[in-house]
Every structure is written in C-alpha cells, then in structure tokens.
Length: 391
Image (cartoon, rainbow, N blue to C red; front, side, top):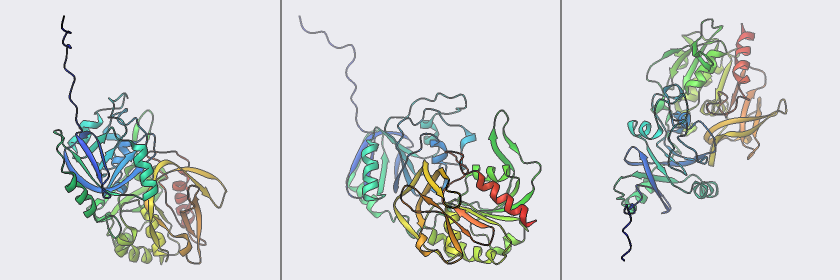
C-alpha cells in the first residue's frame, strides 16, 4: 500500500526580516512590528526587564537595540510604562520571537504596539554572537528591514548601513526635546494608588529637557520639587526668569559636543551664580563637564543596561546602576576644582563629578532606575538637601 499522505503539508518558512551591518554581515530572522526599513547605530542592552521603558527612552534616538535577555514581550505593554509619548529607539533585535503577555498590567502586546508606532523588530537572531561582535568591533552602523514576503535587496541594505552618518557630531537633543515649556507634578508609581500628584512642593526646579524620561521628572517631584521643564535650547535668561531654587540637566541622545554648541554657554552663565544647586545626569552630566572645561569621547560600545557597578569615591560604596550612553567624560581632562566622584567598575570610565566647594554635581547613569535598581535614588534627595541648604 502506498504511504498515507500527511494530514497537513509542512509549512514553508522564510525569513521576514534581516539586519545588515556596514561590514557586509547579514542576520536573518522573523520580523514583527512595523514593516519597512530603518538605519541606525546598533547597541546592546543587558537589562532583564523594562523593554518598554528602553524603547521609549529618548536617549536611544538613532539606535537599534539588541536585547541580550531572551524573554522579550512577556509582560506586554501599558501606557503607564512609557518614558516618552512614542518609542524613540529605531528598532529592536531579540533572540526569540516575542511571547504573549502574561501580566495583570498589560493593555497591549509588544508586536501590535510596535506596529502601531512605526518601529521594526526582528526575532530569531543569535544575539550572543551579535553582542560579542559589538563588544569586539564597536557599535556598527546597520540597516534593519521587515518584509512579510521576505524580499530583501541585501546589497542596497548594506549600502544604506554604510551611508549612515553615525552619532559623532550629531545633535539629537533638538529632535527629542519638548517644543515648549510645561509643568510637571506627577510622582513615582506606588502601590496601591499608582501615580499621585505632588501637593506640597518645597523647591522650584527648572529641568532642561535634552530628552528627559518621565520617571526622572517623577523622581524630582517625589523629592519635593515643583518642576518646570524647558526645551534644550532654553537660555539662561529664561531659566533665571523662573527664579528656581535649583536647575536639573536631563538625559538625552547624540554627541554631547554637538549639543554643547548651544547648551554649554547657557550652563556657564548659570554657573556664575555660585549658590545655585545644579544636578545633571547622562547627557546633562556631559553638558556640565563640558561647561566646566572637560572633554567627551565616543566609547567603543557604550554602557547600556540595568546592572552596571559604579563606585562612589567619597563613601567607598558600590552601587548597581542603570546606564544608557555611548559617549563618556574624559576624566583626564577634568580641571582643578572639579573632582571625580564615581567611576565604572566595568572599565574605569568616569561616572560622576562635583565641584569641590559648590552644590553642583552630576552622574553618568540614570538614578531614577526605570528600568533598574534603586541604589542611586539618594541623588535626588541630595539635590533637594542642597536646595534646602541654600534657603
């Protein structure tokens, strides 16, 4: 008797997405989210949670993110966890196809969320191999494409990756900053009420938005601050007109030297007030360092994750921190009167500075921990204490 025919014919599969590197290397996988093509710098993030916060972090402008943790999509998405109105990262690369959400807070699943917001994802990629390549060779320029029919012009994609200008010399803060000033009084999420409003602020703070995450502003509000957010291009006169008790310099993307063309002169004017507390993080940290006379440099592959150990020189304490930066302050260029307060235990790079005799300080990492550990929240309280002392 002839063999019985199978009940169902085997499904034919083909790659529906590809990631083309500028050196000609191509990774194939299963596409999800939006269709189309995008070019960017490729980085990797080692956080085990918080993919939604990472994708909506304005500091990721101009970058595609490789997630080293394989379980992406497992808690779904919800509007409360957005760090900006829309995803800012250009795309995402994951080991396994996104799983269905299994979390009581989920209001949507990752695939449809990305599709509705025009962001491309690729799954089924050997992210370990990709991460090793980034560590060894630096963050490459890439073209990411998603086509359900699997039709890719590889030569054209590699050419697009090679034509990507890169982040050096690129001012991206202007692209992600707010267009006009606004007031912020929402505090950090807390059980069982969620986000509550600041009702009894003690300090007036002006936050300069180079790409500020919402949880950073919430952390300021929770520390007792009445926050007014100004665009990245705000002048010192506009800041002074609000008569703040302190000034906050936010995180953000791009080359700090490019953003510094307009940000550094403004910060130097504010530094003329020797009693004014100033606190910066991430790009704001780099802006402050440039204003004080230091230099910044591009890193090989940057720091991106929620498990970065940082040592506090003053206390000897080691903090586990959340980081997202591809440039760093060159500690060898710090001028007299500016001390290095924190250092990365991964590579010895600078992670914090302070003026020796004034309430002016900054850190390279994200102390609001979204996502990440809460080891560094004390910095917001230190900022509030500096404003208390001024009063």
